[in-house]
Image (cartoon, rainbow, N blue to C red):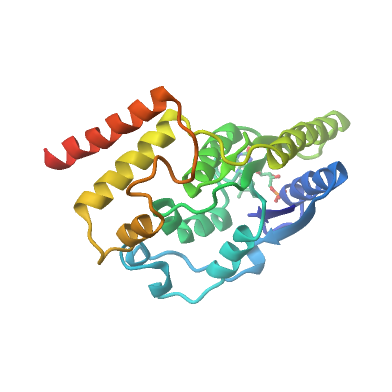
Length: 254
Ligand SMILES: Cc1cc2nc3c(=O)[nH]c(=O)nc-3n(C[C@H](O)[C@H](O)[C@H](O)COP(=O)(O)O)c2cc1C
C-alpha cells in the first residue's frame, strides 16, 4: 500500500516531522510504502476563479503548473494525508492554494476507496476547527476519511509536550492503518447520500452535455446509481435516497 503525505509548511520542522513520524509508524505496521510531498517544492498557481474547470473541464485551465502531478500522486496512493501548520487560526496558504486548485474535484469527486486523514501542527489552539474543515474537504474529494489529529508544538517544547506529540501520532496512525487495511467503500452517511442525490439530480435536470459536470456524472453512471460507488444501501437509506432525489426536483421546479 502506498501512502502519501502532502505537507503545507515551507519549514522542515514540526508539520514535516509529524507527517514523517506518522508515515514511519505506518511502515512499522507493515506493507506500506510512503512519500512526503512538500507543497513548497511544487509550482502551484493561485486560482483566479474563471470557473472553466467547473464548466468545461480542468484541462482548459489557463495555468500549466504542477496541479496534475500532485493529483496523480493522490491517484496512485491508497492513503493520503494533508498536514498543515495552523497559521492565523487556519490552514497555511500553501495548503489553501493547493485546495483551490482541486476545486473542480469537489464537483466531480474521484478519490473513492482511498483512506484520508489530516494532521495540524499548532502553537496555541483552534487547530480542532482546521481538523474538522479538512475532514469535510477529504469527504468532498471522495476519500474514506479518518478523524484527523492536532499536535501542539509551542516552543521550547517540553519533554511532556514531546511525549504527547508522539502519543497523538501513534494513536492516529493506528486508526489510519486499520482503515487502510479494512473496508474501503463504506455505506455513506445520510448527509453524503443527500449531497450525492441532490447534486446528481440537479445536474441531470439543469445541465446538458455542454457541461463537464453533466458528462462526468453521466459517464460514471451516476444518474442511475444509488451512490458514487457500488454499495448496498439498507431499506432506510434507499427510501431516503429517493426522497433526496424528489427534494432536488421540487427545488428545481420551484
Ligand atoms: C505566521 C504564523 C502564524 C501562526 N498562527 C498560529 C495560530 O493562529 N494559532 C496557533 O496555534 N499557532 C500559530 N502559529 C504557530 C504554528 O502553528 C506552529 O509554530 C507550527 O508548529 C508551525 O509549523 P512548522 O513547525 O511546520 O513550521 C503560527 C506561526 C506562524 C509562523
